[in-house]
Length: 281
Image 1 (cartoon, rainbow, N blue to C red):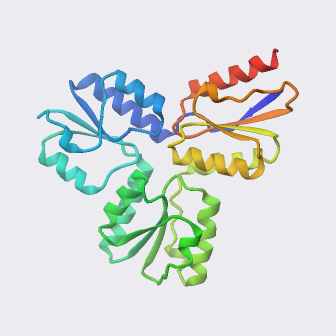
Image 2: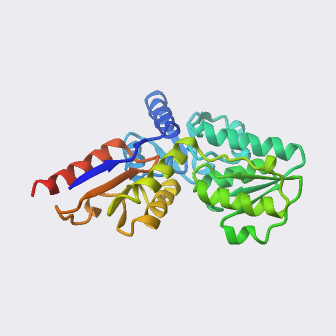
């Protein structure tokens, strides 16, 4: 039995930055809140909670006058910044820089009177933030079936949630261009790190009989990696806890292993150790 790890692995740059900002805030301020989970990884969020981070769902839950508020890595709508300022809270903005750029795109195109189509999940926090920056001129396309009912013109802009499947986005682009959307109006805003993981998972999943995707089940980019791998490798497992590793046969030729962008490297190491222990049986 052997294994092959997809690189990049572990945290992406945006997640590393968010965790670093949170840890710095916890060491600096007496009360630190986060509006929603900082990243989509239960283990990391629980560790930060143990260090004192208070996760809230509404700003009204903050009673302190000089508390610090962290904006999660997925971003938030612009009105949240106004409320933070009005309440004199200390702002720690951990929004992923890539998400920030997409938010800016939404705001710029909205100010120019454009209509924005966002390929993404309506209930995902990043998409909610983009809708906020779209100021009523943005709408969400969740799948290719939705796209077939959408009309476009030269004032329509197509962008994507930063963690979506690039192959599906390109298929969506093709549908929209055939409807009359100018190609120059399409912006592939999927994160480069995410695209690299997707492509390498797709390639490796064609060469291995078993595949492990490591990460939380509420992580959009992790779920996308799982679907990409499963399309080529039916024995694909989405693993968020060590006890979810299936029984392994020493005769397995090779196991593919990939992590979501919010999966810590120490969890990857623990999975590799478990694979090695099966080799030694």
